[in-house]
Length: 176
Image (cartoon, rainbow, N blue to C red; front, side, top):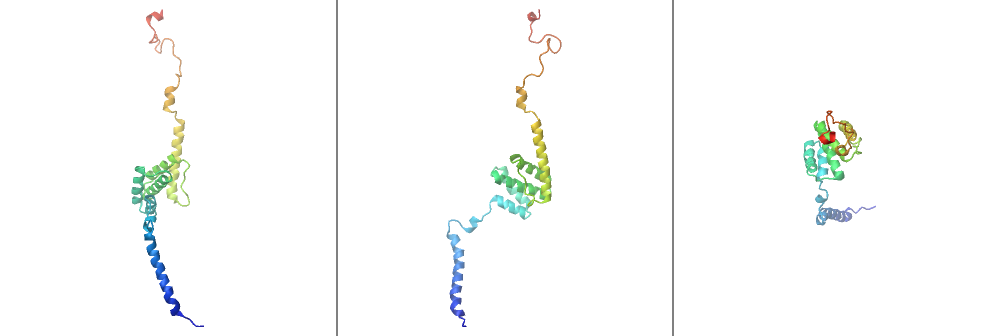
């Protein structure tokens, strides 16, 4: 059997070079470049900072977005979660607990994924959940201020006034 290496190597090499050049130039010719398609959102960048143990940067970036009300819905919840978890990793469990409670105030049924979230962060979340539930229970037990103003008087008026004298609205002629 005879082998023809020269005959196949030139066209094959030309085709490989052509394919490589095509992949380098075609994305740049499209409506959006490859860099623009993969540019991370601030939320994704905050998650990346957390994943890289750059907790200060994650907190600064995401807290700014939350404080300026630039996020809503699931993005807001995710940003608050990353902020809370970053606080715990930085050694600030009180701030982390407060951020977890902020999530619970918006979404009482929300829970972090216990498989993805480390035990130290879950411990802080569990404390926040207990505090949140206690707050809800206290608020439910307290009467509303507007119901006190509209409630009827609980005690009937005492004849002769509270001090034993005539009621202040009686005149001398009514006493006789």
